[in-house]
Image (cartoon, rainbow, N blue to C red; front, side):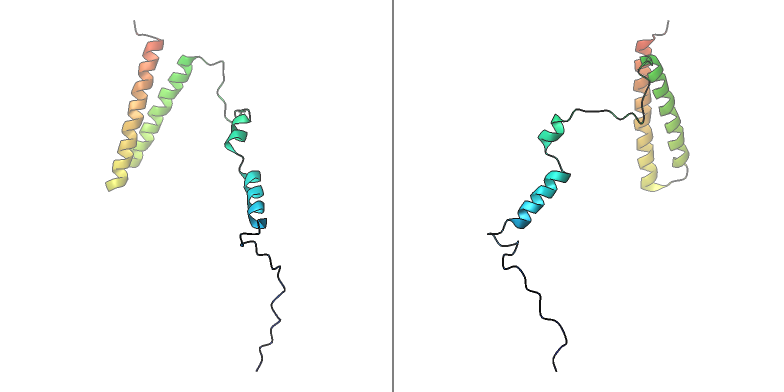
Length: 119
């Protein structure tokens, strides 16, 4: 009994996988060049900063550092509230993050002291 299936389609005898044929390689190179520019192309493109989230350029350094200190203090409080609900490795990881936040806050406070020294 013969199987009712069509004959295999006629194919081009030059396979893209043979060393003589560069069709596939050329297509792949064009695609990569289109989607992934070279490092030279990237460096030649002028940088345009995003304006989605911007900080007012007129703000003083003191204002920025005060905001930074307040933000770090708020994040530290949030982390400590989360720590109370965890045990084990997750708790230790959050405590490590909390210590990093605290060091950043101390550093920002030191910068603020240098900007506006106490009398």
